[in-house]
Amino acid sequence: MFRRATQLHVASSLFRHPAAVPSRHYSFQVFRDVPPLRKLRRGLLLSNRTVGLVPTMGALHDGHLSLIRQAASENTDVFVSIFVNPTQFGVNEDLSSYPRTWDADVAKLEQLNDELKGDGNGRITAILAPTVKTMYPTLPPTSEIDGDGSFVIITPISKKLEGASRPVFFRGVATVCMKLFNIVGAERVYFGQKDVQQTVVIKRMVKDFHIDTEVKIGPTMREADGLAMSSRNVYLGTRRRNVGLVLFRALKAAESEYQSGKLARKDILGPANDITRHVLTEQQSLSPSERAKFEVDYISLADPDTLEEVETVDPAKGAILSGAIKMAPLEVTNAGEDCGLGDGKVPVRLIDNLILQPVG
Image (cartoon, rainbow, N blue to C red; front, side):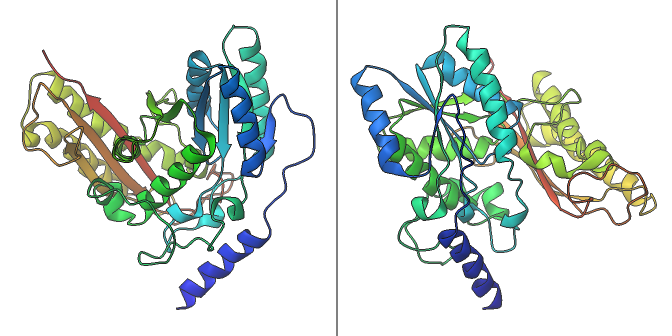
């Protein structure tokens, strides 16, 4: 009861006291509410202009910017949403710790608009930065599994993989995306391949509810060392970042087995599991001031349409190879050490995937 009461207090506070958008002139319009954005959208529609929507939770990085570039190349106008959606955070997940970087975000979008201005593509026309009250007008949002509210639930795919560990996550994602799609009415919406299960859920939702928008998937953007870009990477610091690369290394080892002709699950995932076990053993042998402990949540080999685990890959369909690890907070930090935002105290969930392409 205490947890629920605390959660509702925080949600109600967000509900009543939304942060204000700084007042200044942008090259795009910033909207906090729905009617004025829809007025702009109707005008664009009557002018035969097309809109590409890029949904984000802010803390923008090059992965987001690559999606915006893709949207600008395929539409006359790009709408970017910036909204930290409370309903996709579970009761044991700290919504308040998610990075909120409005000034840095709009600076990146302004710079990108300058870049887009000279290449003949579309540009960022609108930012939708709604309040919680705008997005959830009837009830304060809840993250309780059986909580009240108007939700979109896509099963069984939302219960697998990430959904098994985060039972309300995809309910929150599908719900907020349905709201954004209804508000904007974009011809196309853009998501990154890194959140592969999310793309499957959204595609299923669009198909099942006859939503008139095309779902476009951009490739996973990576750092030079292979780490998939994520807004949460700022919490890692050097030590946890180096160890966290084990997930990418494991998936690449599994991909190599498939590319060499292996189709059986045990043959493909065997090397991946060997790598994670070796690194985990290695870290456990170190002192607390040297190690970065982690837990493997899953390494998956799944059907690309249903996300059902497969024992043998159908070469005509390929498969989705994905995984998740949980980086624990650092036990001991050292003077002068780069521990990331939050001084190494924030647990970080890393997800990644590789698409095993059909053969022949």
